[in-house]
Length: 167
Ligand code: 4NP
Picture 1: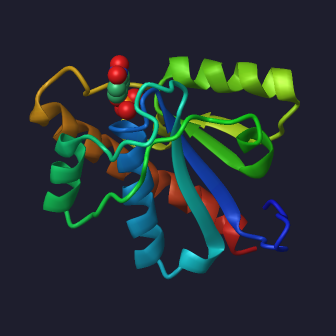
Picture 2: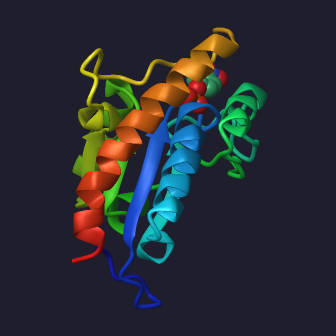
């Protein structure tokens, strides 16, 4: 748990992908709804960001918004790029793929940040792959696949983090 200027002791989780308009906003929205369903909203601070800057300020991709909405999850983030301070301010940086993971590890090496950096699919009970595939250049079906992967993996992540957040 990080102590911020306001004295908050929430467990802070930042989901990270490349553009912050497809995978990490989905993970943010899904994890937030799972945390809410578990009655743990006041225990977590949840955000998402991208390692790239191309889409800064944009709403999530319309296909991500549509698929999430079909499952009862609203996405309300605005894309932003990962900042050096995130490596200090968040307890867990949760990367969608190996490239994101490497970018974060390099930033942590440069800044001395001590956030725990993990791959989201390390928490996927279905060991089909270790990355959340990038759906940006594909069709809507790819977003549904991402939704399913993210939902399973976030459930696994919450099992681990609820123990941290409620101790
Ligand atoms: P995301 O998907 O990393 O899941 O948000 C992408 C969005 C945009 C781009 C690549 C991936 N892009 O190249 O613009």
